[in-house]
Length: 257
Image (cartoon, rainbow, N blue to C red; front, top):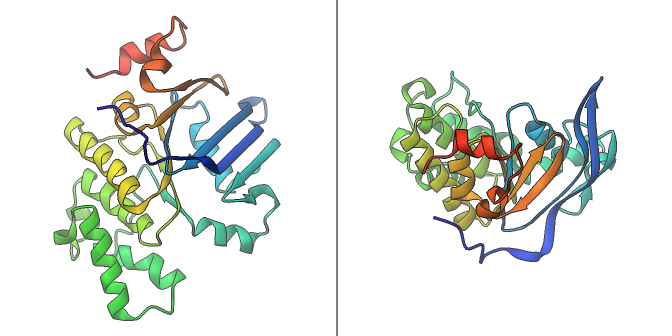
């Protein structure tokens, strides 16, 4: 089902990337890219593995610095912030990593508590419990709250990882290959969850993926990264309405009807 995008505030950009390049030695990963994310939008960055999609997320979050260009997030110029200001900005950004990044020695409850205990020390135990149970319920896994990560399926771990990012109520979500390594049914569930998060928590999100079913399900707008540049942008159908030989094989190999 294609998304309507009716909730998007197209007058407000929460992320603005201008003329950004990034190289590692002789490897030119990003070559002067421009990108913007509107408030309330799910933006999919689509591309093959190794094309610089994850590098883009690290640049946006200040984990890497661009060689050229500027990156503005929620009105802040990321490359100009000191470490303290950068940490404050990152509290407004939720990261969903490929491997879910859960602590194996902690229960689900303890994993969800961790960001609150670390960043919101004024909260009472009752308030922490309420927040933990609220996000666990939001991802449909309240019943697993006392289990260990090793007892969860891959899809459940992914959901708890997303819940842990939501507990600080971020304005922006960054998803790195959210459906990687999951079976087709679980992929559909995760795609649905990404859309539910957007609606319930009013997030603006960038979803990095090479999964076309994911891109079609969650993307209000899609940009395609080809050879270090954003060559195509628009709806799913607009992206693939082309004879470009760099794009067609990608569609033919990936797409699930």
